[in-house]
Image: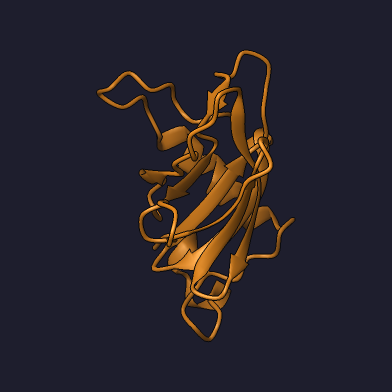
Amino acid sequence: MSLLSDPATSSARGAPALPERSPDRARCIRRAAARVSPSPRGERPMPEPARVARSIAIGGGRRVVLYAPAAGDDARSRNLVCLDRDGRVVWRGELPPAAGPDRFVTVEREGDSLEVETLSGRRLLISPGTGRALG
């Protein structure tokens, strides 16, 4: 059984309820990062778990992870991902069009959606199911 599906760590709504600094949360993220490999399109593997800036359980064994920037990252970094309970990438957040460098800098749960802010100052609501902007 996955740590993300363990009934002892689940909330009443079925979403995992791991404290932000728990050893179980850290272990889940390390396992997930270790299982992710580059996609056929040549995307780089996911960053090291130490680069996790924020992690939010969204239910169904899925977790949205915001990675902190690091030297060598692309100017337009798609650093917001959704991982399934096996650590596979379900989607990568889609950045809005911008002329210069951009990346996600914050993510928060906002009802049935996720509120994100980008380096370029844009605030968006995105779908936790697809990673695409709503509205």
